[in-house]
Length: 321
Image (cartoon, rainbow, N blue to C red; front, side, top):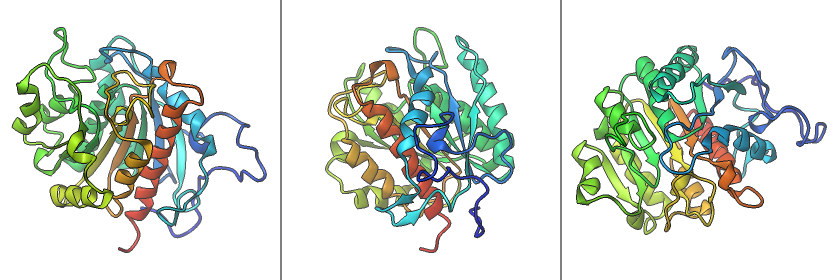
């Protein structure tokens, strides 16, 4: 829980220490090893073996950390202090095994579970979306089956790809099979793009998930989306996963599986902000692939700002309604 006294960890004063100096941690927060005194731990998961098209998301955490140096302590849209109210530290990168997705999922869960048991929430920077399976294993071990709030161009509930069970198109099917998620309390939004057949459209619904296709999502106000999420998720532990490919490639070209017709950065930030008051045990931002980003790194900038909004939600979840 956020503490009333001054947090132990926060970024240095940018008026005294220029943003472009120092080791590149998330938002220039201190790099620490222990979750003691940390409300939200930021961890990188530099893994992209689960990618099926364009690789490069192993460099995503590095890119998001670099872009995040411009983040300031106060969120004016939500009217709240973030850094300075939350104790936020960067706990470095999770150990991964390139080429072995199944082993890496175990490494992720093993690293995150003690952090969660210490009472700290996690904000993970991917990496391809396979990594969320390891995250959910750790969260479910501590909190039980979770409701999922997903913003993504893909539902990621396919089964196998060239014979492999663990890849970035299957994490939520594997999580469902392992009992980590409660589909009746989960809402997947932003899905779009061509599919292999009509069965793909029905697949997430057949598993019990509610889906808002992107064509419907873009007709909704942020408030309508937030109300839809609340009506679906009810009571119980929640996890929020944000795949940067929910944005249109015009705004986020640096991703592994781009799909035309997505959200603008402004729309996506509005949908995240609409979740004010919901309490999540953890968050992630995944699928940033720097080799495909454009001049000015718009994908990494968008991802770092989404991460800031997720931290803002963490503050707001502890404040009176």
